[in-house]
Length: 219
Image (cartoon, rainbow, N blue to C red; front, top):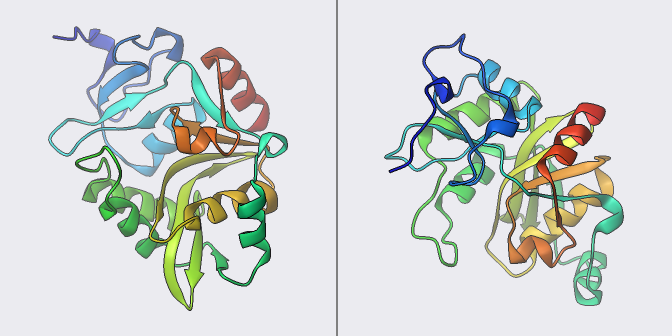
């Protein structure tokens, strides 16, 4: 059983997060438990490099893992076949449109090696509220006017904190990701934790302290 330090527990709205360098090694990056998903709490968390990640049956769990997977525009890798698809008229893109559909697809789409989702209705409500206030942005990919892929995340200063993406047809989420890197003006994309899918696009790991330093410079 994991022993949680007492000051990791967010007992009320005024309880602050601990210094992220105190985050647990196992589970990697756990820094707080409890609290809520209010706009104030979420913006405070992201500005410190912390994000919520939990299952429906769990209390809210907050993480700042080490290392941290990120990507910068100059490191983006686009294969020849993907670039060919980008240059075709196969897909159309829209930014900051149909957010409700995008987050619902992210919530319900089946993913390889996953049996469930971390996006519950409380998270849908919280991030929808952030979207309405301009702190969340999304990219939708359409084929014959039908939404077939996309992503969303929190936008603060020069950083985009990627939250989730989905793909209903081949390459559609990659198309959204490339557009985010090449067209939306962010200096750094936070990918949170490592995945082979993001590795293939050029994402890489950095130490937590380096990520926090970049965060301070770009906010």
